[in-house]
Length: 266
Ligand SMILES: [Ca+2]
Ligand SMILES: [Ca+2]
Image 1 (cartoon, rainbow, N blue to C red):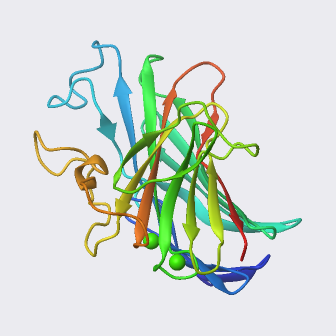
Image 2: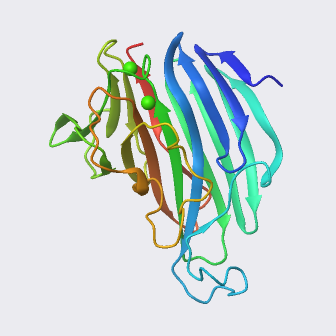
C-alpha cells in the first residue's frame, strides 16, 4: 500500500509511528501546502481513585498513565478507505484495558478531521483521558502565518506563545482558533468536538521541538507541550499548534475527541 495518497483535492503522506499514532506529513490541499506534519503524540490517562492495583505502576499510583499508540499497540492494519467526497485513514490500538481508534478524514471541501475514538473501559470508571494532537500547519508555506482566537465577539491576533483554553465563545461556525496566512489570506479554522473540554497551545516552531517519546522528560519538569511554551512572538512566524482534549470517562463511551478543521481560501 502506497504511503502517498492523492484523492479528494488532497495529496498527503502517512506513516505509522512508534508512539504518536498515524502521522500525516506534507499534506497539500488543491496543490497548496496546509500541513507539514500532524500526529497524536500522547493520550495520557488520570485516575481519580487511589485503589488501583499498585502492581501496575508502583512509581505513579494515580497517573497520568501513558501508553504509546504505535507499532506495538496496533491491532490489525492501517486502513485507507474512500467515501463519498473524501478519504479516511483509520487504525485500532489496544493496550490493556484501553482501546482507541485513530481517524484521519480528508474531505474534498477542505475539511480535515483528525479524531480519536476512545473505547475504554479503563481500570475503573473514575478516569479522564487527555489526547494530545500536534499540528505543524504551514499554510501556503511556513512563512507569514499567524494565530488567532475568537474572543469578545471577534477574531483577535495572538502575539505570543501561550495556552488558550476554549472559553465557550466561538464564531458563527463554531470555530474557536485559527491559523491564517497573510499572503494568500487563507485560513485553517479549528472547532472543538462538541463535548471536548479543549485547549490549544500555540508555539513558535523550532527544529527539534517535536514531541519527545514521553510526555514528561524528567521528574519534576513540565510536561509537553507546556514545556515548549515561552514568550516568543508568533505573528508572521512558523507556528505549531497542539490541541489537547480532556474527556472524563462515562457510560456513554465510546467517545470521539479531536478538532474539526476546515481550510478556507486556498
Ligand atoms: Ca504561510
Ligand atoms: Ca508551522
